[in-house]
Image (cartoon, rainbow, N blue to C red; front, side):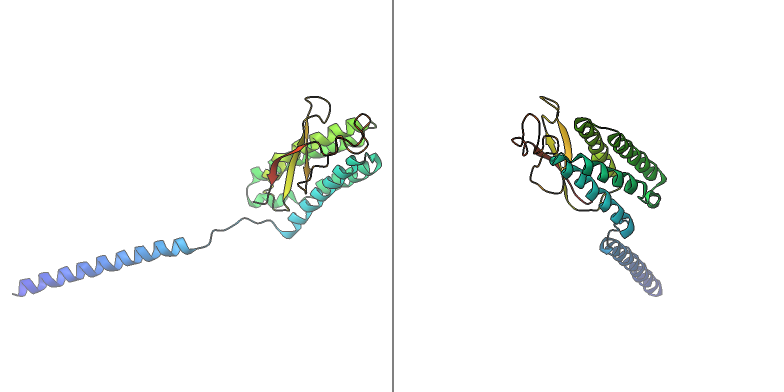
Length: 204
């Protein structure tokens, strides 16, 4: 009888330990699922610097629409300064490699902006603007993990003649072509709305 009682107590104890461990494991899994996912966010200062770069790029694009080369160059000079002011070191919080890639991409955009400043012909300026755009999308926006306003990558299939297309970035879905513009020597303003949206650039 005594052996039976001892055996019964051992069974109860084993069950209690099993139940306690199972419950603890189950609660732990539930707690893990309920924790919010951490999102990487840039500082307000970093995002403000990127917003200024984008806004200045858009002002260059608008000046090309009206073929205002003086304003194009004025805003391009501002863009160069703003590119130099991006606090790229903040990206080291993600990884040093991200920071280095961002620096290289910004240097490419800057080099084409500086080239634009040396041009006298508007067609050559537009070619440098095309290259600036190519450096910005997708490399620049992807590398910095863009968190700004919604933008649109737009394309004109005949920006520099038949089968010589080019892209630009806009903050509007409306197509207003900076390569053919309002005062094109051949098309005048008839090709102002030539183009299409290729992609959307959204905050991650």
